[in-house]
Length: 395
Image 1 (cartoon, one colour):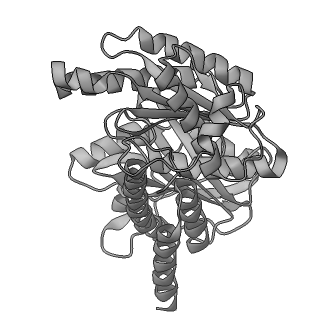
Image 2: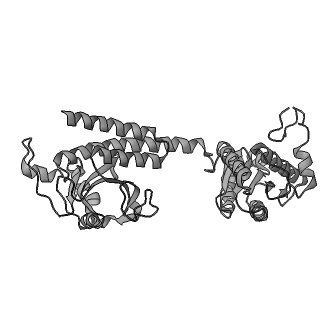
Image 3: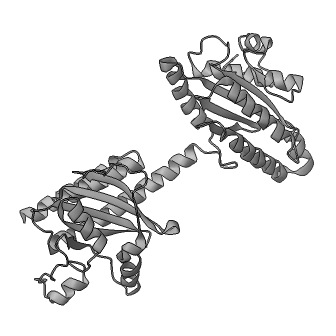
C-alpha cells in the first residue's frame, strides 16, 4: 500500500510541476524529471513525433545524461521507420478500440512475458506492452550509453500519437517490471494533460502579443522588447534602432475602395515589412495599431538599419494601393544623446516619422541626421485638440 501511496504522490507532484512551468521547455523538463523520479530511473527523455518530417525529435534529456546528450538538443532526431511502434503498433491498437500501453526493453534483448497476476495470463501480458517489442535501435542505444533497461510510454494528445516518454535505468539496476510499465502509461497520460495545458497557454500568449490582421507582433510585444533592448544598450552599449512607419493613404483607400481593400493593404505592407526586417538579424516587425508599423533592431549598426528602411520605403511605394510610407528612424548608433528609456527612443523615431510625413519624403528621416528631429521630439506638448501628438508627450 505504501508503494501505491508513493506513486500517487509522484503523479500529483508531476502534475503540479508541469502546471508551474512558464515555458514549453520548462514543461518538458518538468515532465521528464518527474517521470524519471516517479519510476526510479536515472535518465528520461521526451520526444515529439514530427509527422511532416517523418521523425521523432528529442525535446529534452533529463537526469544522468551520457556523453553527447544535451539537455535541450537542437537536432537530436530519429527516423520513425526505425521505431515502428509509433506509427504502426499504436495506430492498430487505437483502430481496435484499445489504448496504447507502455513497454519495457532491455540491453539484453527481448523480455519474457511476465505473469499477469490478475487473471489475464502471460499472453495478455505480451499484448499489453510489457516486454512486447524488440527495437534494435533502442537496445543498441542502451548498451552504448551504459543503461540496462528502459520503459517507453506513448503520449497521446487530442486522440493522436504526439510522441513518447522514455525512462531508463543504469546497467546493473533492477529491470522495469509490469507494474512499472503500467505506471508509465499513467504518467504519460498526466504528461499529455500538462502538454495540452501548456500549448493552450502558449496560444493565449501568442494572441496577446500578435496583431490578428497582419500576424506581426503588436504594441505590447514592442514595448516589452524595447525595454529589454534599451536595458541591454545601457549595460553593454549594444546599438538599438527603432523604425516607425505610417502607411500613407489608408483612409482614402478605405473611403474609396472599402475596408476590405484597406485591410489587404495593411496585410500586404505587413508582409513587406517582415521581408525587409528579415535582413536585420533578430529584428522585430510589428503593427503598432491603425496605419502605424515599426521595426525594432538590436545589434545591427545604424547605417545598416537606414539601408533596410530605405528599401522598405521603396517597396511600399510599389504597392497597388496607398501612397507609400512616412518613415522615421532613431538609433543609438547616431548622435541623438543619451537614451535612458524606451520612451525617449520612441519619441525620437516618432518625431522623425512626423518630419517625413510633413515633408512627404520618399526616404526615411533619421534622428540625429536631421536637425529638426531632436527639437521636435523635445518640444512642449501640442494642444489637446491637435490630432497628432508625439508618443510620450502628454498634455
